[in-house]
Image (cartoon, rainbow, N blue to C red):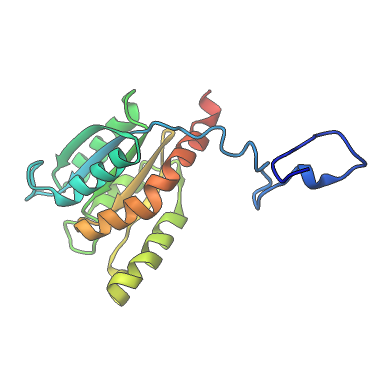
Amino acid sequence: MSDHDHHHGEGGGDDHSHHRDDHGHDDHSHHHHDVDDLQAAVLTVSSTRDIDDDPAGDSIAELFREAGHSVSVRRVVDDDYDEIQTAVARMADRGDVDVTVTTGGTGVTPDDQTVEATAQLFGKTLPGFGELFRRLSYDEIGTKVVGTRATAGVVDGMPTFCLPGSENAARLGTAEIIVPEAPHLTGLARRDEA
């Protein structure tokens, strides 16, 4: 029997045909909820950028499209707490957005409010995103990584990721974490809705 041949219920109690991952999920069914064709919203948080001058947003959108996903919303949001929170909440209410990525407003200046505005909407937090993002960023920027508060969570069944506003950070977080994991996270976050 090859590694790919599974004969459930046959044999003398040999449990090699039923593997479980670290979370107790069956390896052959764990990803059946994945969303293969995501529709993403890209929100650039800035009071100085516009849609024609948005290298970080351009990078995020490009990486989603290269992976075979769609970008259904692309806009610039003023770095104002209420505007950010309203924009993210509206993405969760739309029927054409599966995942939202914000870029900008995750630093430590007084006008960096993306994390505060968005975190209030999280029904669940995804702390591993910020941890992994900072780990990967450390290789590029060293200890300056302590100044980023990149975060993620689930807003009404919609994974939402908050990235820094630099093009390099947006590209790193999107390519290395968000695009690979968003289909699975979206499927899991919506599993009870089906």
